[in-house]
Length: 534
Length: 47
Image (cartoon, rainbow over all chains, first blue to last red; front, side, top):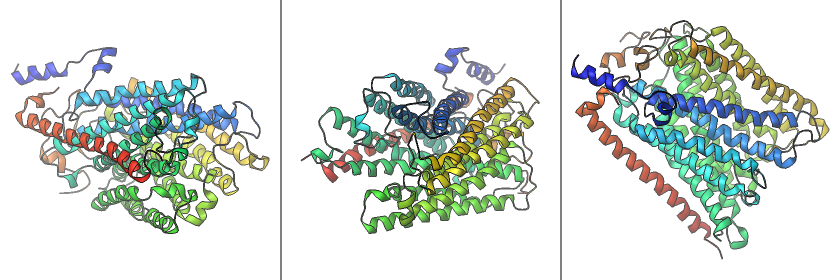
C-alpha cells in the first residue's frame, strides 16, 4: 500500500458514537448537525406559532394569558430567525460549499465546530427564560426599549443568548469567506462559482457587517439596565428611537441574510430541472451584490411612523423601492431560464417554482409597504405579518426545502420518496396560502399585530388562517418522514442524481466520501456542463 | 483531516485562510466598538 493510501485511510477514520458529533471538524458532519438542529428549532418555533394561531382561532382569551401570548410571538420570531432559517443555510453552506468549489473542507474546521456547538447552548438559554420569574422575553423580536427593559429576570439571559447567536453567526461567516477566497480550486475564477456559493459569499459579508451592530445595541441596553448608562433612556438624555435606528441597521440586512442564500439555491434548482444553464449568470451576481448594498441604506422604512424629517422618509422610500429593480432582474432570469427549457417537476423544482411566485407576492406587498403614505395605514397591522411571512416562509423556508430535496440524494446516497415529497409540497403550498393570504385583508381592515384578542369582525379570516396554520404545521411531519426514510434507504442515487445537474458536487459519488476532494478536481470537471457544449 | 492537507500548496492556502479570518474577525470587532462610538457621539451617556 502506498504512503498516500495509508495516509488517506488514517484520515478517513473518525470517532464513533456521540463523540464523533461533539468533536467533529468535518464539514459534512457539521453541516448535518446544523441541518438537524434547524429542523428541531423549526418545530419548536412552529409549536409557538401553533399556540398563537390556536389563541387567535376565535375572539376572546382561550388558551394563554396576554404575557404568555407575547412571549410566544417573541420567541417564535427569535427561534425561527436565529434557530431555524439561519442555521439551515449555514448547514447547507457547510455541506455544499467545499464540494462546490473543490475544497477538502472548510478553511477553519475547529472554529466550524465551535460555531455550531455554541448554538444549542444559546437556545437552551433563550428557551429556559420562559421558566424564569417574570416570564421570558415578551417585547417582540426587535427588543425595543423601554418595553424590553420591563422584562423580568430573563433580560440578561436573553441578551447573552443573542450574543452567543451573533458570535456563532460571525464565526460561520468568517469561515465561509476564508474558505471561498482561499480554498477554491485554482481553476475556478470568482465569476465561474456556482450561484449558491456567490450568494453565500455576499451573505457572509453582510453578517460580519451587521451582527456586531446587533450585539452592540443589546449590550448598550444591558448597560442601561445594570450599569447606569443612558444610551436609550430618555430620562438620562438617551434616545429610545436611536435604538430603533441601530436595530434596523442590523435588521434589514438580516432579512437579506435570510433570503440571498435562498436565491442561490433556487438558481441551482431551476437551472437543473430546466436542463439549461442559468440565464444571465453575471447579472444574477450583480443583482445579489446590488441587493446587499441597498440593504444598508433602507433601514428606516421599518419606522416611518416613528417621526422623521420628510427628506429622510422620501430617501428611505425611494431607496427601498429601488430594491425591486435587482430583485426583478433575478425573477426575470429565473423565468428566462425556464423559458423553452426541458422542464420536469420533481419536488425540488415544485418548491422552486412556488418560491418564484410566492416570494414575488411578498416582494410586491413589500413595495406597497415602502410607500410612506400607505405605510401609515399598514404599519403594525397584519398586512406586515402577511408580507414578511410570504418572504420568509414561502421564500426562505421553501428554498431550504427545495435545497434539501435537491441535495438529499447526494447526502444520503438514496433517492427520496417522490410521492411523499409531492404530497408534502402540495399540502404545504395550499395550506401556507390559506394561512397567510387572509392576513393581508385582516391588516387592510385594521387588525393590529401582536394582540391576543381582537374585535369580532375579524373572526372568519382568523379562523381560516388558523386552519391553514394547523394543516401547514402537520404537513411538515411529512417532510421529516421523507428525510428519515431517505436516510434509512431507498433507490440508489447516482453520482449525478439529476440529469440536468452540473457542478463539482455531482462529480462525487453519492454519498460522497467522508473526505472529498482530497485531490484537487481537474479543470475539465469545473468547466463541463451537460447541456452547454463548450 | 485529509490527504490534501499534506500538500504544501494546501498548507499555504490554509495559512492565507487563517490570515483572512483574522482580518475579518478584527473588522467584526471594530464594527462592535464603532456602534458604541456612534451612539455615544449621537446622544451621549446622559445629561
